[in-house]
Structure formats: C-alpha cells, structure tokens
Amino acid sequence: MTTDVHPYLSASTHIDADHPDVRATARRLAAGASSEIDIVRACFEFVRDEIAHSADFRRNPVTCRASSVLRHGTGFCYAKSHLLAALLRANGIPAGLCYQRLATGNRAAPYCLHGLNAVWLAQHGWYRLDPRGNKPGIDARFDPPREALAFRLNDPKERDLPGVLAEPLPLVVEVLERCASIEEVLAGLPDLAGDPP
Image (cartoon, rainbow, N blue to C red; front, side, top):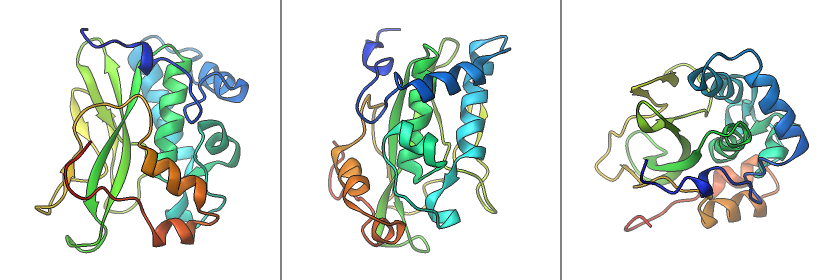
C-alpha cells in the first residue's frame, strides 16, 4: 500500500474512534470475527441496519460526531459514515470518507452531497461501501470486490467526488453543526457546485 494510512487510522473531532463508547462497540462487533473482512462486515451492517437514517425515520437530533451518532442511534448519511469510519479505525482498519453529488429530485436539480465510506482491504485496496440504510429501492451491501452502493449516478451533473478523505468536508460539518432539526438540514443539504475539491 503506497497510501499513508496514519490519517485513516487516527481519531479526530468528528471521527472520535478513541471515545470509550465507540471503542466498546467496536470491540463488541469484532468479537468472534475470524478475519478483517468479518470485522468490516459486522461494523458496516451495524451502522447500516441499527442506526436510523435521520430523514427516513424523521428522527432528531441532528448528529455529526461518531459518538453522538452512536449515542442517539440516528444520523444523516454523512454522520453515519463518520460512525462507520470510527468503528473501523477503533478496530485498526484504515477507513475514510467519500462523497457523491446526487440529484435530490427525479434525476434533476436541486443537487446535494451524499456521504459514504471507503475501507482499505488488503486483497482489494480502497473499497467503497455505503451505510446510509436500506429501504425500498436501495440495497447497499458489503460484497467485495463488487461495489453495492445505495445510489447509481444517473444524471449528467451527478458525480463521484475523487479520492478518499481522512476527514469530513467542512461544508458538511457546518450544516450538521448549525442545524437544530432534520427539517433544517433537509432545507439546506450541502452541495458542492463546480469542481470537486
């Protein structure tokens, strides 16, 4: 691996992999796993299935920090990706953040960012996975080497932002920390017009 993995293993303000509750949950999810793949799958399925997507379930509060997502059991896609990254890092597995720019309407404007993850797998390199939560029409899975993400790009203005980031985009954090309710977030979802970072 030529990538410096240190940033993808480190705890930080929003990916607080060193928080006692995050560490305890990471240990519990890894218990009995026979491989790194098993640990990734357990962490992914926990965040996908056990943490409610705020918009799907209309559940407050708005969360951002991984430990807050875990404590409240809810988060938007961005926040859920922070928790998955924290759980993986707490288990010593390099994990980062990825973003897509997607249409919020029926393949048309307005657009917003969607947050997901990438994990470094020894056999496959960086592999993207999406813990946003499944519902009718969305079937995200952990199925390496095949990607099974929540959303496919369908509109000419939709795109995958390049790279794997160690930290969340500042504009995503700003929205999550400023908004007091899910309705506020939904009214001003983060978007990145023009060229990606």
